[in-house]
Every structure is written in structure tokens, then in C-alpha cells.
View (tube, rainbow, N blue to C red):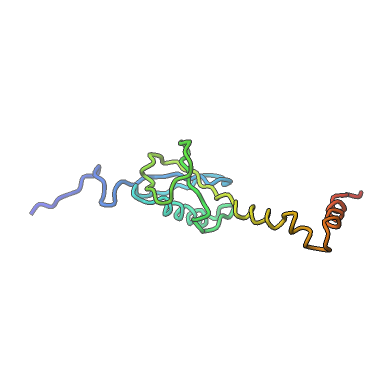
Length: 140
């Protein structure tokens, strides 16, 4: 009986595997690991965050993959969709960035609107203005 040997240049059952490099914005160097071409972007972000934390890199990012966006380093397009496959972009170099905190900025702006400023503290907008100006005066 003759046994069949798989040739070395044929891909395995899981498809082709890629060595990708992900640069985290604000970090010293890229993270490199091997993924399958069919791996979705969300899973790649999750793997990158776990690898980043395991290596003890700074700044500390957290582990919620919904707070991050992945970009192709050599393509001028926007962020990759979390449901795309990583191999469909034809790139092996990526950039991982935190999502902008637009909701937090909007909430802070609503909290500090002129209508709510007068209602907090001692009562009038004039007292608020006087307190603000007194804080900014520096004495040496």
C-alpha cells in the first residue's frame, strides 16, 4: 500500500497563513504573529490586544476589541470592517488605533452647556463667571 504525502508547497486545510505586523499607535514597535487568510478582522484585533497585554507593553490599552480600529498601513482607505477577512486586503502591515471618544466629548459638552452651568453651584451665571476668573488669576 502506498501512502500519499502532501507536498510542501500546497496549502494546508485551513488555507494560507500570513505573518502580519500590527503597529499600535503610541507603542514602541509592531506586534507580529501568524494568522489564517480567512481570519476576520475582529479576531485579529482580539489576538493583537492579547499579545500586546501578554508582552506587558505600554501604554495599557485594555481588552475590549470594540474600542479599536484596524487600518491598512499602505492603503489610504478608512478603517477595516470587523467582518472582513484579513487576507482580502492584500496587506500584511496594519495599524491599530483606539476609536475616538465622540460620545464622551458630546456628553461633557451637554453637561457644561450654558443652561446647566447657571443651575449648578450658587445659582447665577455671574457668580460662576467670577469664580472662573478668580481661578485663573495667578499670584506669585
